[in-house]
Amino acid sequence: MSLKYEPVIGLEIHAELQTNSKMFCSCSADYSNAPDPNIFICPVCTGLPGAMPVLNRKAIEQATVVGLALNCSINEFNTFARKNYFYPDLPKGYQISQYDLPIASKGWLDILDASRTEYPMRVVVRRVHLEEDTAKLTHEKNSALVDFNRAGVPLLEIVSEPDMRSVEAALSYATKIRAILRYLGVNSGDMEKGVLRFEANVSVRPSGSSELRTRTEIKNLNSFRALTRASAYEIERQIKVYENGGEVVQETLGWDEARGVTVSQRGKEDAHDYRYFPEPDLPPLQLDRAWIDSIKSGLPELPDAKTARFISDFKLTPSEAQLLTSEQTLANYFESIVAKSKSTAKTIHSWIAGEFMRYMNDSGLALEEINLPAEKFAQLIDLVTDKTISGNSGKIVLNEMLNSGGDPAQIVKDKNLAQVSDTGFIQEAIEKVLSDNPKEVEQFLAGKETIVQWLMGQVARATKGKADPNVAKELLVKALEARRN
Image (tube, rainbow, N blue to C red; front, side, top):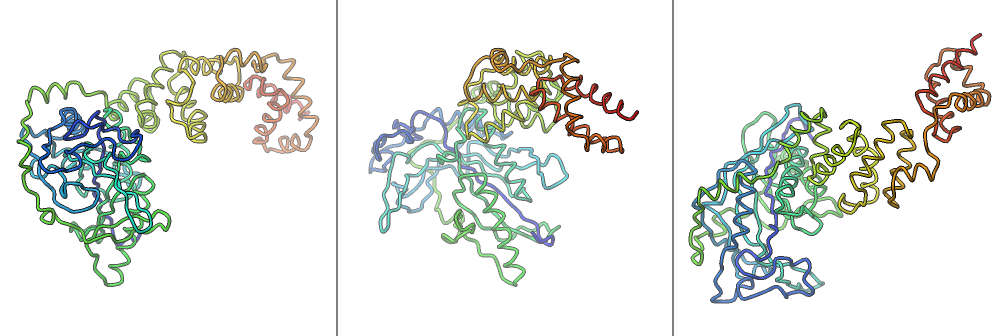
């Protein structure tokens, strides 16, 4: 990116709420498990004349929870409006949403921007409002099929101010919002299923300027990869437009993942284009302050608070704590191991961040899908801590447990992995290694002391990883020094 320009990014995040029924009717909201298209429908969610909407109390509660978690003011008096636009996935020809008086507004979220030195940076949350999701379109050659099972599912829109100045900041903000929604239990965060979608509002301006130039909106980004790639592409595209003497046109864009480019969909609408007006079939919503306070008092420990506690209680670094608190299930798993282990929290973090997460990434499995009880993992880590087995042997045992289950002590016994401190056994292996590698011994004697690590590897191989590394290194160095005479 040109240093002459800086990006200005705001995000709109659409999150489907995890309620049993839809936003304005009693139809099931679990459309992903519908056996057929157009099964979970009724006159309300298909927009038939005369059908009357009724508010979903659970959706109101979940929206309030999110607003409080994002440090917003909850508006005790809020209203619904009709947002008019005409697409085949919108059965009524309008969407029931919130406009002038959303359920929550004027919040904030602190994030880390890896591209800058200021930590943290604050993103202002302009509004959090409720609306209904649209139907699902499936395009086939010259026709489109409409499935109304999703129409009317409660949708929460979280709108930020244009406070982000890099793609990294936008990613950090989006990642943190997802984590908070999952901590609160209001959204699964499963972007592959479309339950969480991003829309990036992007513009660029001369570095150091405070002006807000013409922006474009990139719609329906359903992964972090799409968010970052599309935003980065659009930033570069707009810079080229300005550098070539052109003007950026306000428009709505789509993202072509295959080609890696943004594509124009239509001119960008402003609020007046939607002809908002109060929803006549829904009365204003009046929230009781005592009810709001009761919800606030029941908020769970959120990622920032949990991170601060992990740093304080477990003496972890900020980056170590943030890794563990990025997912509530991972944080809970870590704490369960700590409670059952005599090893330090830092040691446990190292095992989780290293071999365990490598397995998760390679296998594509979520933590919930891995059958490794915290108690068994704690036992394995303790076997390494008390030097019953070496670290390398511990990795072998962990791999066996992850793939086939089993008890760590029994696996150590079955595979004969117990660490050996018998100096005679280790000394014998060392002598053989030195005899087989005279060139490396000469290098050490000539002053290349780093060769010790290579020789240690040979000793580990000769002893099949069973030699106590501290004992082995001490004996190895003594044997090498003895050869100076």
